[in-house]
Image (cartoon, rainbow, N blue to C red; front, top):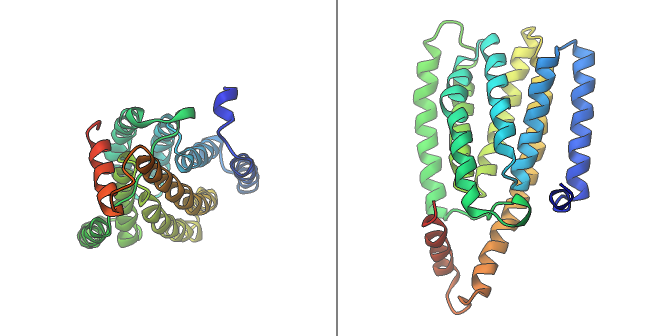
Length: 253
């Protein structure tokens, strides 16, 4: 445990402490139950661990996935329920075993980045699927904010796949996802949802963390690339190094 904690910065400890305190305060003020508090707390721990690149984020995330699904069901967000139980739950298990093959000291994963072409293709595909899913959700009686719900689902799936494959661009998707989730739960809070306030705070915490995650993973991907160069590939151009680094890491997946 001491060795594990040595890989954490002061900022990361402060970040956890601040949002745990916020979770306690919101739970008391809003009169929310302990289950809502547990979902909030596990979610904060999960995203901070993911931003750190720690493999422990997966078991914590599995608990959060189940708990959040129940809250979403109670608030008529059926798209959220389906995607969390049918996709995120199994992907949490899969991601754990995928990351195990690419760990550094302290249980921290080796990070990497996408090419510009891949980013463009993924972005275009996301927009098309969001439009189609939003239309389908709008046909369900009782569905709240169908297109926002669709966008959060598609972005969450995309970010999860990128996360399991260890790409830094997951955090760009998470930033957009978290902004939309804050808006979605703000509507639910305005409609009188008892969980609305704590969910707005939770997704706001995720938003701040996703910015840090993008910073940390950009730095981590750069360090992995530089390490590859130092291992005897300094004579190649950057694009070739990037391709070979991906080939090298793909082979173990």
